[in-house]
Structures are given as C-alpha cells and as structure tokens.
Length: 310
Image: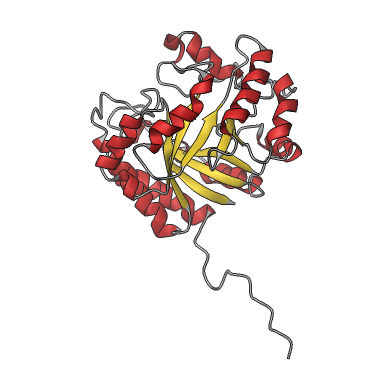
C-alpha cells in the first residue's frame, strides 16, 4: 500500500531542478503547495513528504518554510552520501539531521542513504554498518539506496551526466546486488537491519527487474520501500499499464511513492529538471495517481465489525 507521497526528488540539487529557471525557489514552492493540496484532496490521511533534499541544507528548508510549503506537508526528507558525493564525513549524520531540526518541527525522514562500491565492495559493508549505527532509531524512515546497481547500458537520471566526472559513474555502483543480480558482500549485512531499514529502488519504464526486485525485498525482510512514478513517463504509450503493473507488484510493501520529472514538452525548457509551464498539470498528475493507487477509505470500503452475540 502507499503510505506516503513525496513531492519531487532532490529539489535543491541542480541535477533535478534547474536553479537558473527558478533562482529563488518560488516556482518550486508554488508547484509543491498545489501538489500537496491535490494529494490531500484525494486522500487526507496520506503522509505528504517534501522531496528528499540533497545537499542537506537548512537554508533550503527555511526558504520552503518562508514560502509556506511546510504548512502543506507532514514531513521533510533528506538524502546523504558522505562517502561518495557530500562534503562532510559519515559521523556527521546526527549533526546534519539536527541542522534541519533547527528550522522545522516536522518529522525528518532519511529517504536515501547509501554507499557505492565504485572503489571497493568492502567500503559498502563498512559504510552500511556505520550508517545503521548512526541513524537507526533516530529517524521515522531510513531507506537504503539501492537494491540494484544501475545497468551500465542505461543512463543515470542526472542533468549533466558524464560531465560530472567520477561522480556520475558512482551512480552505477550503489546496489546491494550487481547488475547481473548476484549479491555483493553488503547484502548479508543489510539483513541485520530489516525491517527497521527500508530500501529505495527506482524502476525504469517497463523495467525487467521488477519481479526479481520484489522477490529479493521479501527475502530480505523489507517492509517499507521508496520508488517513483514519473510525470514524464505518463506521456509514453501504455504508461498506465506499466504504472498498474509496478504498483500491483509492490502492493505488499509500505510504499513511499515519489512524483517527479517534468515532461520535455511541458517544461519551461525541454528537460526533466525544468519547472512546468503550468504547475497545476503536475498537481493533477499527483492527484490522478493517488486517486488510482491510494484512494481515501470510505465507510463503504472499511471492514465491517461483526455483530456482538445476543
């Protein structure tokens, strides 16, 4: 079941939201408020999460508070990769969460944390242990990124791709499973932390790994996971068939579904990081997905209580 709807992915990361088109974040804030309200109109009980930020920047959260976004969501989320991309050390995790707690009383989710095997597989084992020691019990949701390595034949969804240098290629080595599906050493370690620790797995359109991913997550004892439904993908032929298949396959998990990615023809610029021309269109996409996959419970759909014996 869907337990939470996340609005965008890393909105303060220029690989996922174009700061040149929205330098003061006002366009993003307007879109986020419209989307949160649209989600709430379909299912008021669903947790609404401000998309996981990267870098972990209290200034960005303060800006969202100033623009009113935090009045429309139930939690904020952060992403951290201190052994791969961030300019801080892994032992600073509690401090980083504390920095966000100084600007909001909302729950703080860690909706992506991970360690690549770009340099060595043993680093991921150590990083997973250290991350678990630092974070378990200190956040309502901790979701490890990710189950699978990204296949080398695919592209990572970043704006600048190979121009990012080695930072780009680390995207392909974040999994607990290699591209061919064989386990890395950290997989056995991960078993120690489920179900307290969940997983993140982004599925590409018509991803052939879907069924195997579900089987692995069940084998690992995972109960909560995060994935995405792409607004851009919704314009592909047979998009709803794929969305239906994906969400049906994940029905046994508590799912955080992330709504993101601007279709090229609906952005101010033809790129997935662009603010939409009409932000209400993104909000309607969010509402449509909630209506389809997480509609509000009505009295008719609630289980009936058996009558007491006379």
